[in-house]
Image (cartoon, helix red, strand yellow):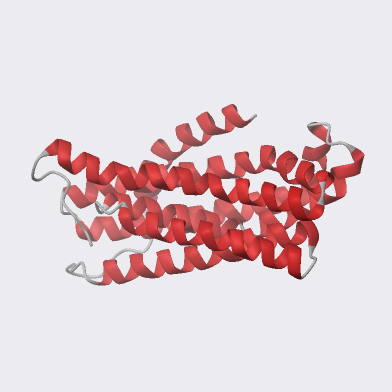
Length: 252
């Protein structure tokens, strides 16, 4: 549920809000840990190396998604706190549209140049094919990662850190089971590891976005809501771009 974080005792409010965020960080790391463990145990050392090697590049895509999360969260929180609900909806819709365009550009870039990026970081020949396969599937799942991060940013802006935590927790735990199913039972190799992540992230994303729109439908506004605003895009970019650059530089 939506919650005003400016009321009651600040220390208690912050603790209740932050604890699920700490939990989310842990479960987010479970995705890569689970992929690496399953690849190493059920496929072999080369598969483990391929997944670990690919992770260095996926961090750059994660940086863009996280930047969109921060941008949407900050702008939405300001408008929600000011009770400008009509502008809030416009800002969120604008952020979703911009994020979709950015995601499409990154997908095209990734699918074309992921091989070159793997060569750039001196990927060994024996793991190159598996690394590229893992990355190709991962890149196809970028829309799920982007929109899940946008949804998470909106939840945070509305004062709710628990709902995205539960989605991520269930998704991360399910990813372990699906990893083992695809690799140990169906013998799908590295592709199975990547597909398991894509499927679990996809389900989590769809549920999170659906809940966001349900929450928004309960926020009453007067008049027609503008679907897109360049002013909102500008505010979004001012916050998101520095975050994207910071995380990207660390990854590089």
